Image 1 (cartoon, rainbow, N blue to C red):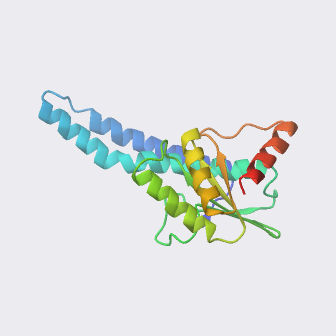
Image 2: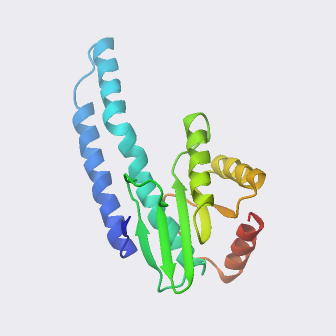
Length: 191
C-alpha cells in the first residue's frame, strides 16, 4: 500500500492516467477499418490493450471518492492517514483503501464494475471475504444499484460486519446535515 496524500493530487494522478489511456485508444482507433478482418483485429487489439486500464482508472477514482465520502460523512476523522492500492499489488491481503486516525481504522474495497455477473460476482465474493477478515470498520464501495444489491445480499447471508455503499465516479457532493444522519443510519443497518 502507498500513501494516498491529498485527494486533489490523487485525482490529478487519475486524470493523467485517464489521459494516457485516451491517447493509447486514439492511436489504436486511428487505423481505418477497410475489411472485416481489419475491424476484428482492431477490436481485439483495443480489448487487449485497453480493457484492464479502463477498469483500473475508474477503480482509482472510486478509491479516492470512497476516502472523500468517509471524511464527508464523518465516519473518518480529518486527521485520518490514508493508504491505497490504486492498481492492486502483489500483496492482495491489504484492502484497496486503509484509513487510520486516532483509534479509528477503516478498511474498504472498491468495485468499479457495473453488473455482478460471472467473473465479477466471483471477484465480489473474494473481495468481501478478504474484507471480512480485516480489522476495523469495513466498507465495500460499489458504483451501481445492482452491485449494491448483490453485495448486500452476500454480506447479510454471510453475517459479515461490512457496510455496502453506492458512490459514483464523480467526487461526492457536500451532504446536507439531515442526509448525513440518514446515510449513517442506512449503513449501520447493513452491518
